Length: 275
Image (cartoon, rainbow, N blue to C red):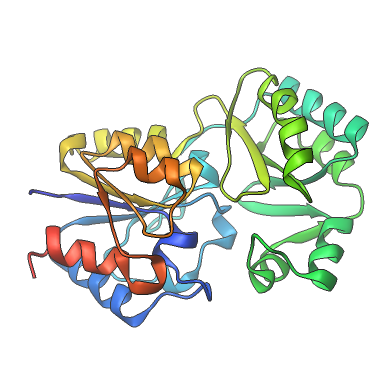
């Protein structure tokens, strides 16, 4: 197997359940990059929320953020690809969120903004689906998130709708999917996200691989959640984590050990580094 590019989801994949990069995974990624393989971050996180412990690994030169809204060249700090929500789609998303009293986050210019009441709820009660510390240290609470979205409607990368229970999510899912000119995915069990039509990890990976002149057959991608499925299918060798959602596993060519068992590092050592 000749793998020249590795695309890595972070949460639930490269990072363990404590939201840290293990020593084993770090060493493996360093060795892969040193061997000439392009190691690429491919995350649903906004750029400013990407963990420094990953971005500072020598040889990692590109990061896909906000579910494919941007590709950043880490050496220059400049975007080499961007895809935004249409202002009209943002307007309709605001109307839906207001009429249904939905909790939302909005990603803008690489930063994640969160409704103040949702931030406070997570601060007080924690979160079943997301690491509490991660949310509290990366999100900027906004007293009127809808007004913020309106004022920045032409430069929003991503809007996340969060739900307290699955029944409410199922009820609202058709309405969110009916929003025009957007890509709809989920990265945790209690959210639905919308991005621009050309915002997806798979699209960004396609753009980057063409720039680097690497065919998809020579790409390995890792993921655990619904927003990773297109990227896993795009890659020549798509890997689902042992802790991945069932539909992610069905889309993959290989199922690795879980994120708490260094599944990323072990798979790279076996199939890329041949060790």
